[in-house]
Amino acid sequence: MALLETDGLVKEFGGLVATDDVNLTVNEDERVSIIGPNGAGKSTLINLITRRLDPTEGDIRFKGESIVKMEPHEVVQRGVSKSFQTASIFPDLTVRENAEIAALAAERGSFGFDFLTHRRKLHGVHEVAADTLDAVGLLDRAETPAEDLPYGDKRRLEIGIALASEPDLLLMDEPTAGMSPEETRSTVDLIEEVKERMGLTFVLVEHDMEIVFSISDRIVVLNRGRVIAEGTPDEIRGDEQVQEAYLGG
Ligand code: ADP
Ligand code: MG
Image (cartoon, rainbow, N blue to C red; front, top):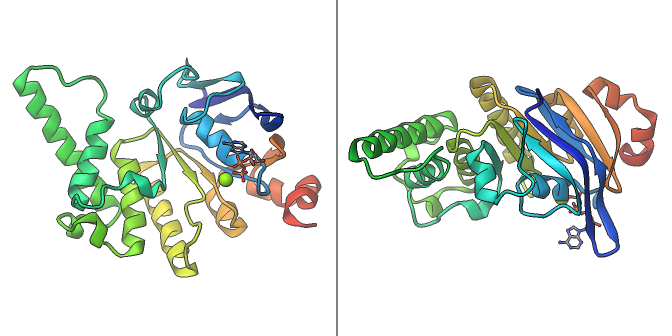
C-alpha cells in the first residue's frame, strides 16, 4: 500500500487551474522530488496535502485513509509534517523548548487525566526532542534562545521541528531557497544524514537540479498543473519532453 496517494487532484483559483488531475503516489521509504517551472503548481500540491488548501476535486489518502476533509493538525497527527517554515520557530523560546513543543503537538492520542500516563508521555516528549536535536546537530545549543541562532542553525532547527513530530512523511518546499551555496550544501548534507539515520520518506520541491538528481529515488515533473513526466533521476535526465519544458533543451 502506498504511504501517500493523491487521486485526480484539481485545484482551481478562480479560472486558473493550479493543479490539474494530479495522481501522485509516494511509497514508504521513498524519496520523491517534484520539479517544474515557476507557477507549475508545486507549492499548491504541497499545500493541498497539508490541508492548507481545499482541493476543487479529488482525494488524498495517507496510509489508506482519506485525509481530504481533515484539519491541518489532524494530518500532522497522522504523520505528515512540512518543514522549512520559519514561522514554525518560536523565537524567544530555547532550541530545546521548540523541539519539545513540536514533539508534544504531534503526540498521537490525547493526554487524558491520568497523572502517570501524563508523566510517561511527557518523558517521551523530552526524549524525542533530545534525539531530534542530536540528529540535526543542535544538542549543544539546546538552551540557546532560538532567535540567537545563526541562520544556518535556524534552518537546522526548522528541520528538527518537523522531525520532532516523528513524521512518516516529510514535505519540503524549496528548503534551500535564499541560501548561499555553503548553506545549501550543509542543508543537503543534513537531509542526507537524516535520511540515512531515520530512513525518512520525503517529498521535496526543489529547483536545484544537482540536489534533485542526487537526493531522489523518483522525480515527478509538473508543468502547468499537470504531471508531464515521472521516473528515476536517470530517466528524467534523458526525457526529451522534460528537457524541452523545463531543463531548457
Ligand atoms: P509553484 O510552486 O510551482 O511555483 P504555485 O503552486 O505556487 O506554483 O502556483 C501555481 C499557480 O497557481 C500559479 O499560477 C499561481 O499564480 C497560482 N496561485 C497559487 N496560489 C494562489 C492563490 N492563493 N490564489 C490565486 N492563485 C494562486
Ligand atoms: Mg512554489
